[in-house]
Length: 102
Image (cartoon, rainbow, N blue to C red):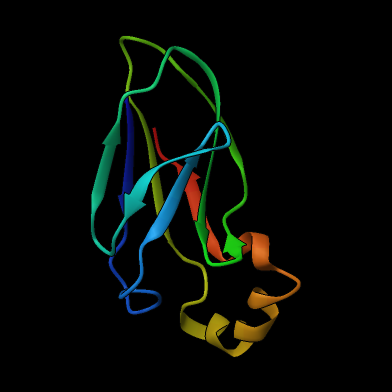
């Protein structure tokens, strides 16, 4: 099972992220929400999108007996707010932070 947790924060708090698994949209995740999704055993690619910006693509391996967990949040927080336009243009594939935790 894939478990995706979105950290609550002010950046993008009114907007959902599209969850893209193996090139297909499998759902949306709102601010502070946790999304659980059954995935077949094997290798997978995960990323999140919001408008034309997104997270980096993450590869992971799933199995029947072990959950895979990721955490996501807007990358433009704290001092990075000063680089907002840079994240909307050159760094648009890093606009959303997506990291595997388990």
